Image 1 (cartoon, rainbow, N blue to C red):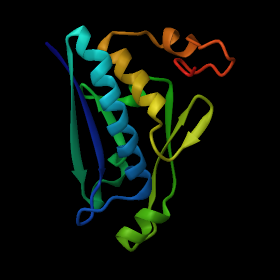
Image 2 (image 1 turned 135 degrees about the vertical axis):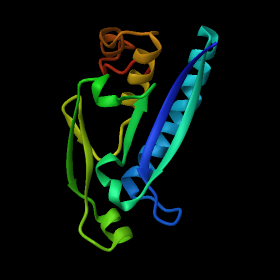
Image 3 (image 1 turned 180 degrees about the horizontal axis):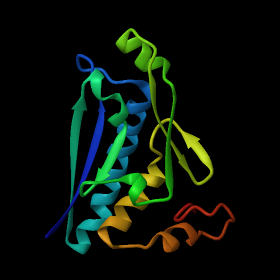
Length: 146
């Protein structure tokens, strides 16, 4: 069986993380369950690694890697940053955190759709053109919507 390793790197301060990292973690947990059901029949095991980072590693926080490759190197995602009130409260100092620009929208968490697309592309199950052009037919352009 092949393995798809998904590593989530995020800030950890005494067991707490910021709101945007928390949201990414929830997205990843939900997608990991879904990906296991999808990939197991293809002989691919999904392993999730939770890497906790200290306050000196903020630029790496809220990063997801697929078999060691950052999501922005797999999909058309641009990385930026903006002020993070949640990290500022946790760290006691003004903090700017990672954001992602995906499909024309800026997100403070890594969206579930991006996680799914990057995982499937890394696993070799679907190409991005297949994923992004697949539609349920209702006009929303979301694969599997209806």
